[in-house]
Length: 284
Image 1 (cartoon, helix red, strand yellow):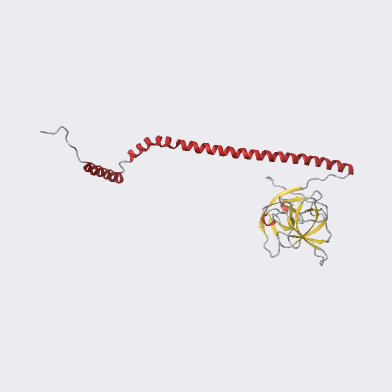
Image 2 (cartoon, one colour):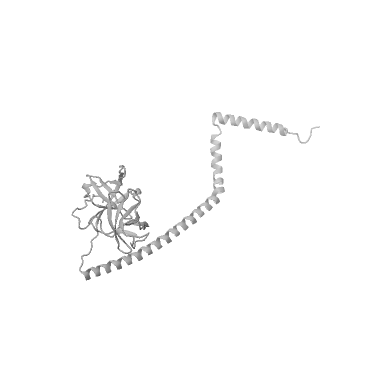
């Protein structure tokens, strides 16, 4: 008598058959790329599911980035508003001082000072001579540059033109041992003579009496004496004062307000009383 339900292959046989079919499909796919269309179809079928799976993470990342960007923009906007407010206050004060200066000059019958003519130049080389502090810039006689012309950067006076070529000029820095400049203290108008020491970051004030009222930290401005540098530009700040009574004068050193070893761009000045004129290019 036959049984009602015939027994099929055993589990072991089924496993062996499945493994054999798998290895056969792998071999055929490897050799003939027969399963490539199937993979493409399966990938296309699974892609929406994958997209839906990572969608919450992407939305969370985008939201976090949006909040972060908004916070940054808000902070920058707040800082810019504060800066604009400060600049507006400084502008109002400057306007007041200009009006007051104009009234005083009218009262004294003095001519108003005109702004100096300016031109930007780029540093293209640093002079390599021993004990020399010089720069080479990309402006020369073709731009109206002349010997003795004052040179500044964004912080203050850095030197003066020493030699001029057609398209280049050599600038002697205030720290050079052969350079001297007349200065005055912004705090009390005491006039001093500053000479270069050969150290790129140090000037020495000459012939300062022990009883001087200068102090460490005093800002020294150009005095306008000598007719080379215009008056009122920052030059250096007093770093140290040593009053040794055994010496005839106090030893006073000052640090230039400009980083003379990191100058990249300079500003050339043509004082109003100068006979030379700047020659600008079309893009200037």
